[in-house]
Length: 583
Ligand code: XIL
Image 1 (cartoon, rainbow, N blue to C red):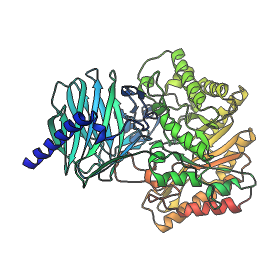
Image 2 (cartoon, rainbow, N blue to C red; image 1 turned 90 degrees about the vertical axis):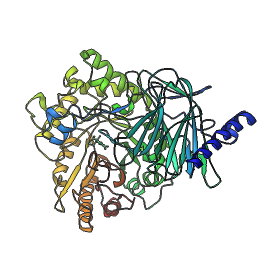
Image 3 (cartoon, helix red, strand yellow; image 1 turned 180 degrees about the horizontal axis):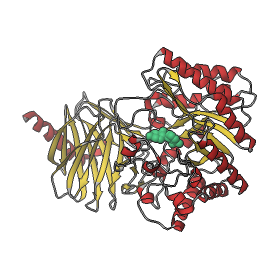
Image 4 (tube, protein in one colour; image 1 turned 180 degrees about the vertical axis):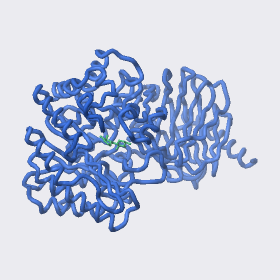
């Protein structure tokens, strides 16, 4: 304890000395604000006095509208969960490299009792559209005049939260010191609390985020860090500018583009790993010539408040794509899921809903005009059962309730008016094989075309399964029938979201079966007149949407690259097909 006090005294003296001798602590401490990128940080504005943080109130909702139209008990159960916060992360901003004992000093200017938080991530979350798998993170901030500290240990969504001290207002200096296995918290020079560090920053790098509680807002006036002894480290590094990966002759994308009738080979991509995980980024850049934002363009992510658009994450994907000559397929302008509560939780009149939708489509398509070549304008409009009512359309969503079937016409027309060059798709699952759902879709598309709606293509999602080691998904020869029917209507078709869930541990046999399933689907697809692209839903099993929901330690296994980023048999089979099977 004595030694502890001595160290604190040293820190205190250090700060006083540096402040008095050199006028600014930055002579000793690394400055994380000046000349670092805070411009791509959602909710932040860089000003003379610091980084202004405004409330974004970005939340992740459970599947709200589904229960009435689903038999799936898990989905119905999930709908009862409350929305969870999804605070912005400065992905492209500075990273603090740490080792040993160090202090991070934070000066916050706060003007209300509302929460004002800075988030320090040792590992980043994985973001799904129903939940956020938290990484290892420390949140420090002020709420109601007290210091509030939360620790996420990377194993659960529930943090340990503690409050310390009181009466903190105006400009508050918070010091977070890691001293061997503890965090020590000081406010305005006084120690107010201490918590055990479960190893949050053991990977050696800290990424910053922030969040202002609804109704509040604050300014980060200074953010500095300092190592406490010569064996420790606290240095700042920045992200590199976007890399351009050359197209290598044995890559998927090269072989797909070199075909007689070139084909886009795609992957669904997420901003966090794309920006922060080099291996993931290099797979995307090297292997694919089309990407679809997996979640970052969905309504609740990109339009979290009535007058608030959050483009940064999706912008990163689009910028990366531009640097690497990758075509972007936008996803999804209109859907019944991933809707923020400001849309679903308020009773609007039909004309108000129409205005919300129009503003959303026009703003998002407008923002990406010329950069996003094609869009899923309407995603999953059809029910899973009960095709005899509402022409099979899902009714439990604000769009249908306000406009009936015409919401689909409206959405396509609005998108087309803003970007007449963009190819506009309707994307759906469960329509791969002939059946009632496909019939409902086919009838819908014919009505749309008859009304002159600018629809250009159909996405067949192709989320498929294996059971007891055997592929039990859609049969390629049957899918071919449906694709041809759409092509006969003059539409493009695409495989938009393929994955083949093994529903069991990966084994060499299962990997082969998975490869066979992908290969046969691709072989069939490349022979279709209307086919423009073939994509998998994700990049590697490490971040796959097939990971069981709300589970921290289980991964999916339905994609081309495994959790260690290694190429699976599917990858090699797909290359053979692309190289050898004529259209
Ligand atoms: C998935 C995302 O990949 C997951 O991260 C999320 O947890 C659930 O949604 N059909 C679609 C996609 O159109 O948007 C869905 O994406 C998968 C099913």
